[in-house]
Image (cartoon, rainbow, N blue to C red; front, side, top):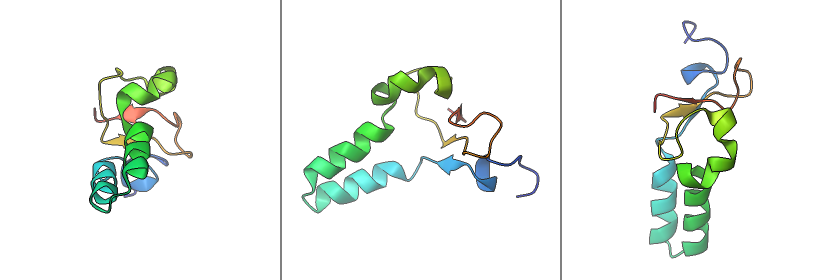
Length: 79
């Protein structure tokens, strides 16, 4: 953990690979509106307004996003 700068990866980054499971769980529980809301908060096409911060293409889903303590918070990593 100490090999990563603050705010990146396991040292304060925001991992995204678990987000689809939250949508799936909500859909299975018949919480369709929440399932779609979670999807929209994470789907690259729906966060296009943040592309100049995220710095990845609008069709790319990132493994993680740099956390608030990072030098570049909000930047997508490992697309």
